[in-house]
Length: 465
Image 1 (cartoon, rainbow, N blue to C red):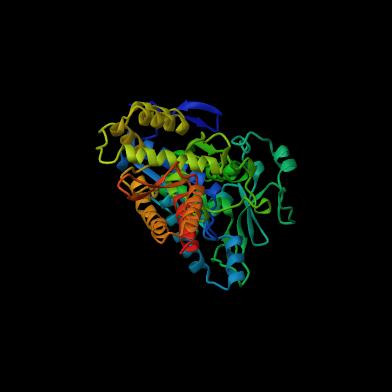
Image 2 (image 1 turned 120 degrees about the vertical axis):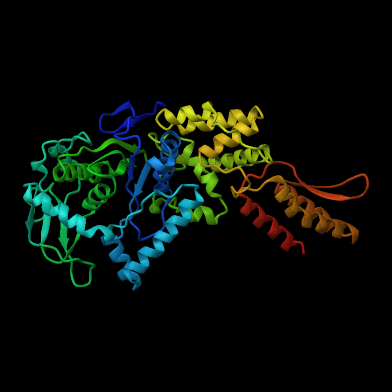
């Protein structure tokens, strides 16, 4: 069997991964709260755990891996967005889930086996909450149900903090119905204008943390192999998940491995609307940056290191994909994944190392191995990457050479010179061959996304019509 080593956040050690049952490998990833478009930071865990999913499928077989990623479709942010827009909550969340699927599909991410919606698992959440009350780990107060953190001696073990440290460093809600400020909500009351469900504690809705515990138990059981997410979820979300699940189902171990990806920067700075560097995946796609380019940039940094998105990295990724696509055009992929690509992924998802191996295969002209390795990493080099190849651009350039020739034929040499100069600024050379035929060619690889290049070229054409 192939050795897979993963860094377990629970132990802070790189460990040999051995599934509980190789015939039923379980993976859970905390999914999005569906009220708006997914931003680039949301995409990083999707791509990271898509690589892990592909690895597990390769090693254990697709039929033996159960990947679950949830949708949080009951939340105060959703309520606020619905109220602000006057829209029905279900319509809003349905639309947002559709956006999410389209954007993540564009990044080449495989759909999980299950994508449960929180609103479809309210009954299991109520049942788990009641179990926690019955076992002395939770209490009802003023229509709320709260988890008693002091009832679980191991609380704080995942994030490595004591309760006192957490209280000093966290923003916690101090409320009269709490026995301790660190106690967290399992159930809360709903007003008439908010979504709610009947429960033993009155009409209300679940807290955030209980949904993942209930859904992972329903779909993966009391013990499963891997739980993943961004490191921003380590505390309090994952800490609280672990506590309530361990107390509700002490017969299980919840997740054996915890994996957390680091955060994303933009041009060396934290992504923020106030800094003007906040953008969604759809923003990039609409700017003409293909999903494969976004994926390659995200995979260029190890998941446990901060990832810095830059325009230069996106341009380098686009050029690399064009080279790979041209090199493998008409080439049949080798039947086996190259070890130089596969082995780094087995070593704690070293995507940067695997991509370096793809570059080496391209330099060596190993098209068949390159195509197989790229496919394993989620890159289809069959001409569906969305990047422009030279033949496509040649067709785009033909009208420009016709425009330049028309000016020359009309002996409007001043205009012809202006067209030629403007073309040079875009990296396009206009020339006349010995047989008097005119051609337009790229003098260098374009440095912007193909859609932007085409738009600039169209503007040039319009200018000299």
